[in-house]
Image 1 (cartoon, helix red, strand yellow):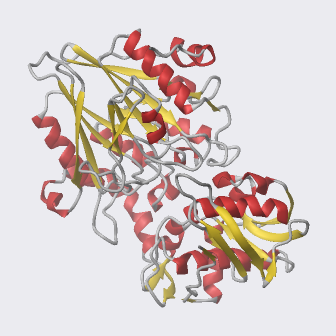
Image 2 (image 1 turned 90 degrees about the vertical axis):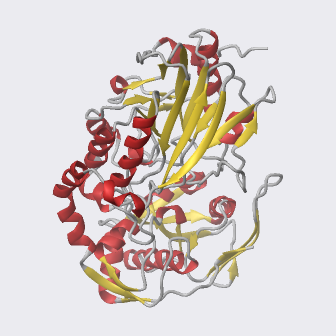
Length: 509
């Protein structure tokens, strides 16, 4: 039994595809070694907390593997940008220059590539040496259209490997207005149609899906869903959920059976470039794939290419200046995922909302917008900007309790998120077998009333339905802060120099 190609996708996905066949010398061992990264998030230097990662170190590994192997690819699965001051200050130009220097062969889009809008993204990607693919975004008429193909085909000896790129649904994840001209096509339908075409029409011997949808996602689909509902995909190289999928098993299965019972390898190497994933695809007779993870750490420092250091140097001064400018003192360490940091950020949104409108009763903030933690002791301007790097602005809205409840339920689906002091939400968490549900919601000691209108401070991203909180769009907008949230936080810290938030779990099971 074979998949037939849905006519809705056939024209869009397949007839416009430009096939790139790269000739490589014949070799006895017909195997392809695929090095891959995902969600590197502009971490160009090693992380200042654990000294892991760094583009220079990554290049050492990439160069070593290329020297040892006849057939290699270097692939990025999206979100190469947004997360450090290098992106805030330079808009992705340095990240692309560095990826060119490392010789990335193929790149796909993540959601954060769109953070500065389609026009800015296209301007940056015009300088990319990598082949850019997107199978399930219809880019017709957008500035991205001439830059992207639907798939790639690479030759390995006398075998051929097809590569497709699968992206997430932008609505609800990417800010409205930032993906104009991009039409989403169903990820599973598109992946299966393109893989079928590559296997049964183009005659490739293996299909690799490079994705930015997440291992398991809310809402679906994720990589596990694509694997289970496929027949022609051999390997999935993923991103988006920052999962470190270990090849020897663990909590996340690295091999998932497809519709025919054949195992599909699923990989993802975490985030911030702290590991390099390496897939060895053996296509001598039958397709098989092995996987390993290589840490990117200080043992590589003595071999870093001076050219990479020189390339980064002109961009470093602006970054270092902001990272050294002290603005506050933290009484305790505030890890990125800590309740204390989430409370602090939600309460700043509440405080800013109250400045804009004294009638504000509560605040909502998505925890995914917090991109780093803060150290105990001195806190710098650069750390605040990289903690909240987006161009979000606080908004004050009037919204019915009936529309707040589904948004709070979506927060419960991801294990809870940011609510201001005075809000208490008790929920039953989501499982594989059942959706999350709310048990109780109180605001300032009173049960949330579905029929009442509440005055809420939040960020424009959430007010537009971001993080799949779609009912938040049913609001009446009252006012918007004239400055970005990170600037509001810096202003707040001028008055409240000490950061010492409470540890109350405001959304709890």
